[in-house]
Image 1 (cartoon, one colour):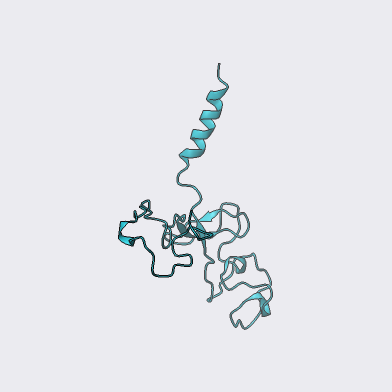
Image 2: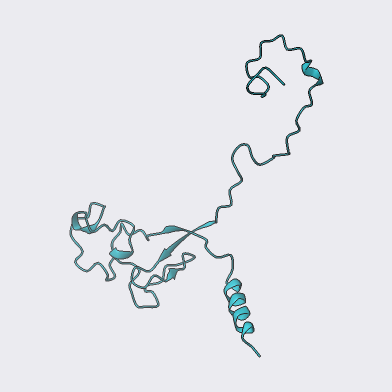
Length: 142
């Protein structure tokens, strides 16, 4: 029996250990490639798009901006502008000479900039929803 209370190597070693350290077996560590450092990210992609302020439908940014959305809302209006802010003077962050009274109507403002947002890609394709629906329907077929 050893005279030490704890048998871990290094605990109260005096340096005049009678055993030769080169004869001790070396413990093999398992291969841990991804345990150190940052883990690889699996983030969804993003896309830049613009939505209608009235109905929320995605507006096609390619080509010429249409005059109105399919719901009838004017796209060249204050509510669609990136500078629109209800808390600012004249409800615009830009210095405008006079207030535009109808914010959802079409106007000819020269400082108009279509509001865009960056959204995450939440679906990889539209086929997955159809596959799940078909699998559910096939479950109850006789």
